[in-house]
Image (cartoon, rainbow, N blue to C red; front, side):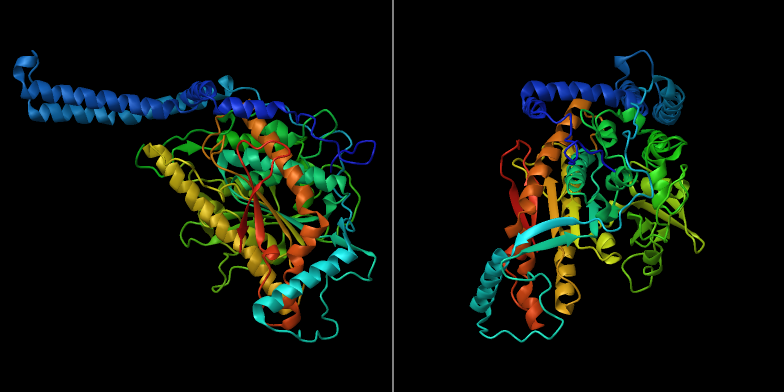
Length: 587
């Protein structure tokens, strides 16, 4: 799916320059913060005209009521004398005017919005990008590991086990159950091939710009290795579901001296192209305040309409016929990327999902299963509902009504309410051998406590989502324990990287300047590219899996070396190329 350069490697991201570091440093200065505040005020004033009108009318109503009461209590202060009941009636009438004021302003925004909204930037797939049906079933990510190094690491791991447990003689391994990662012969290289790769994308609102930069780096890394077609599954929730569409739609490919459609979209949209005030609502009474209809128009423009850049690949993955005549294997779903877009059942609180994998639908939904039954997604209407239900952040957006194949309907909202990092969706139904995990909230350390009501509430939401992500990361450890104890397969290596606090773009800050969004995109691209080289260094990669060897050989609990713990790379806000990462262990 990526365009290649003359030397056979994926073309580098053309727009990646040191300029992004200057933008982030300027953002942290006093002048930069004032400019961001001014810019944000302009964007918010336009998009949120109805709520602002509501506040203005409410203040005027309160002042009028207070003035009427003062005139009633102190007759000498004015010539108008109102009784208590008259003052109360006037105040109530002024308060009631709040609702018509809100509705009128919201209607005006809806009518005038399409005319005043900035024209979206054109997004097109690069010339020469692969067409649907061209996936190579034998593609793999190849990593060469020295046999001598493998033997050395095995001795270190065994020594660690003996030191901790006191057991000198390991239990004899039964035939056919040897440690599966041992090299074939001493002195030769061990070729480690990852043929079933999974990608997990968390929720995080506007922080999806960070995630998009990491996705682009992973895409270019796999393209350079000739392993793009080894991607087997993509799981996402909330903004991760939106970003997953770009991968599924083939919109991360790019040519030299040009950004990918993913980067173009994240660095060019305006907030009024995504949301607008909802109508009709009762302010303070309704369960939501915003509408995502403009964002749905973006979905249709990018993925649904005839000629949309991501339409053909999405049709292919959903099992439908592409608009173009394509050739290739069509044996069910084996040659297609499986997708899992999560949502939360409002009534039961269980995690549900939409997928193109019929086997996953059949395997879930039982009374003893913690996952609600998945819904098979085979059309663009179903896919649109799946994505925007997964992004229905309460209380910004309304509940969605999901029609199920077995009949009935389900009231659903944002998947991040119950699981903000759906690792179990990616790892439960496909026999993956490598995971790329991109959380957005699991690092939430700050230096100073929040000083305002709004920032405190935002902080509480970040901590909650972060704890959900940290708990989800434990699933990798538990899955690996299950595989090793049952001797069914070797452990799954997992690459994990996340932006560190304080973030330049927070969850609700869709209004941030395009230059700032481009800077955080490029920072995460550079950081992820560097982290990938570190992660796939032969010694570290093999050591992380070889730490499970004692448990495999003895069929009972054995200590796991520290190298086997899941490590999450944290990108500091001031990170620049060449800097080290903060690493946090998850187990």
